[in-house]
Figure 1 (cartoon, helix red, strand yellow):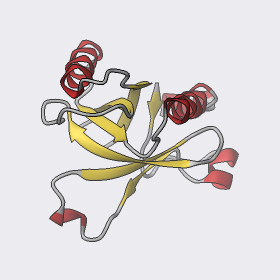
Figure 2 (tube, helix red, strand yellow; figure 1 turned 180 degrees about the vertical axis):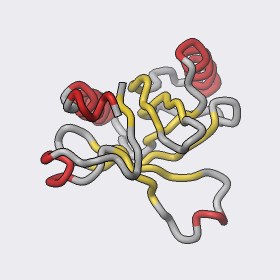
Figure 3 (spheres, helix red, strand yellow; figure 1 turned 120 degrees about the horizontal axis):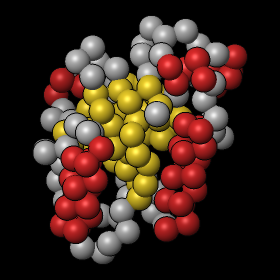
Length: 141
């Protein structure tokens, strides 16, 4: 599982590319109902995600998602990566809530900027590859 902490030590690849995930401060974040967060893929690209609680997540179009467990200390653990595939936004939401509840997620991070099925598959593969190639010490943190 992909975990992060703002004060975790960084590996050589992290020093080159930056952290695997980081808050995205947009304007005065307190003015927004939802937060934004960057997740970095194996390619080094950063992907901006809108952050919702699992229960407060709205119905969503076809987009990339990360099901996340946010711990009491503020660290986030990516549990599952994917993309919604249904044309019906309510079915996408039902799927996300069901899968999230099964694996213990309490947040949904949505990347809404990949506008084609091919682009969404690339984003999913890039983020998944980053999780799979994390050093063991980073996974244990």
